[in-house]
Length: 416
Image (cartoon, rainbow, N blue to C red):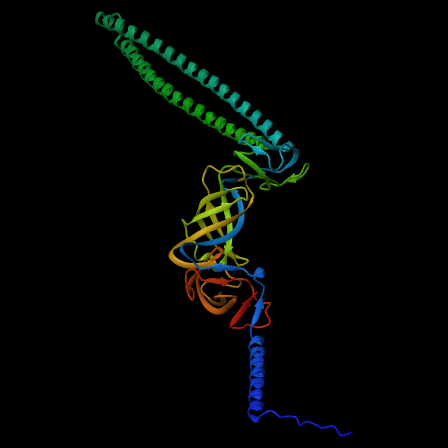
């Protein structure tokens, strides 16, 4: 049986051409999307740190670390050779000026004091003996003067009596002249004895003064020996705290060897180390804030050490007299020095890798889920904030996270 076959109708030539064009467009769009998509990076929003550009006053601060230390310190050393006999106080003890820290021993100093005392007693006895001898000599000379004075008086009376008898011819002229001569000689001897007694008094006074000077010198020797002996009892000499004890029981000490270090408790300063790169911003008189981790203390920069150690510079901060209970010597603290205050500036929280007076590219959040790369120029660093000189406006948001883990840097970033 014959079956009738129907002939299939083919598409018109124009329809085939339109279909080919449509397929080509789809392929081109897919390729463009694939190529464009391969140049963008996508990140999760929860993994990003996003900060907003702010405007206002910005304090340029320099952060450092250090310790509190006593403004007044006293180093105690051994005055002479000695042996540590007793340790009374240990480091950390609060002391007054008269507090005994250690007791030392040196038998030679005891012997020196005893010898000095005996020599002083002998010198004082010599002074008493000298005074007795002087008194005896003075009495002898006074007796001689009294005797000659008596002879003079007798010669004077004899002369007066013979003067009338000569006129009567009872006494010869020669006898009278001899009597007058004796009177004159006794008078001269009296004058000489008086001068001798005056000189003797001066000599006696000088000899007594010399002996008193010897006694004074011996008293000085005794005082020195006693002082050296007293220094074997080592006292603090300052109200504060015993910061360091450098001796052990039974240890032999040489003259000048360190025994202990005393420091004030209430009169403290802060020694803060700051980076060398920021030290030039610090000047005397700048305000500082010391953080003891239990409180904050305001201070003022008083000294800047010119020596650089491990790329840091030491800055001394004067602290007020009234300090919180948490402040004590040798306490580790953090310090912030306010180097300057910038007025009417734009700033943002410090992005990862950003440095003062440099430029860096950051992603700025655009509308939707896209972020585009923009270059920002920074000025001064103020702690956790950076001054923005150019590249950003107030209110714009930037990603400050470290995006170094991205495979490559693209102009745009997709935020999921």
